[in-house]
Amino acid sequence: MITAAGVRKAYGKTTVLDGLDLDVPAGSILALLGPNGAGKTTTVNILTTLVRADAGEVRVAGADPRTDPDAVRAAIGVTGQAAAVDGLLTGAENLILMADLHHLGRRPGRVRAAELLDLFDLTGAARRPAATYSGGMRRRLDIAMGLVATPRVVFLDEPTTGLDPRGRRAVWDTVRDLAGRGVTILLTTQYLEEADQLADRIAVLNGGRIVAEGTPAELKRLVPGGHVTLTFTAPADLNAAARALNLPAPHAPHDQADRLTLDVSGDGSVRFLRTLLSTLDGTGVEIDGLIVHTPDLDDVFLALTKEPTP
Image (cartoon, rainbow, N blue to C red):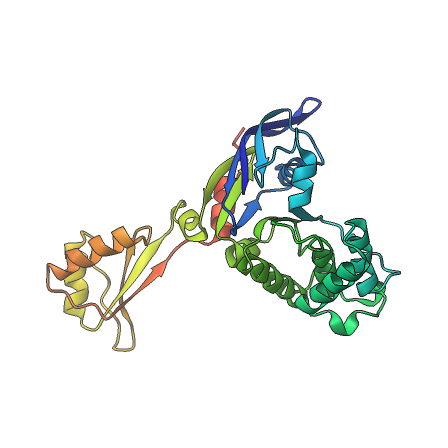
């Protein structure tokens, strides 16, 4: 539903995007991560027809933003970093205004506004001025306004910036619901937990390029530090496992309250676990349990976006 190949954009002598590649399947959520100035907002602006790329190929819902911007605009909804809500209008009036701008007609526009108020749990506040809404409510209304024309693709540029945890989770629920209805979503965020919670795939943008892309689990396996903790019920099994895996002999537990555990470095993948368990099964070692430890997205982000050493 969204594709970009070799996209470049510079402002004067400053290169913002330097060969950006993206591929977002229909009905999925892609989170675009990157440090400040990485080009996240520029990417959204190019994909939504607000800025022209200097080079590269882009398609959104099958249309080229450069040669057929009207077709792209008819297929998308956009929520920027700053809410586009008019605080003097009520929630219902904000939505009806958007319906009028989309030429939905008087009755269909009001029906659509009522549907969105219900979908975003704003019916009870529909007649209140938006200025009285909480941050989370204003953000939900802002997203709803971008959905008046029933877009197939939605762009959310840092949708939860400035929200408290309750408001953030309310927006997360909204995004999940949209994806469940088949809407394709590209969101930019600096909240790693947000990307982990929402995204089917994550693309890490740094230096104007995508430096890594994959599911949250795949990205976590890219950086070192993963290991599997094995638990045993008998010291003999613990020592036998260490010998089978060519690991140093573990220290003997001081008393029975100490856990009999062994840490084995590895990425935690299915292939790694299968090999590990097969090795231990061949020696007759009994394992009481295992826990897979992988780096979190903080580790991934820091490893992939670190500045080069001068």
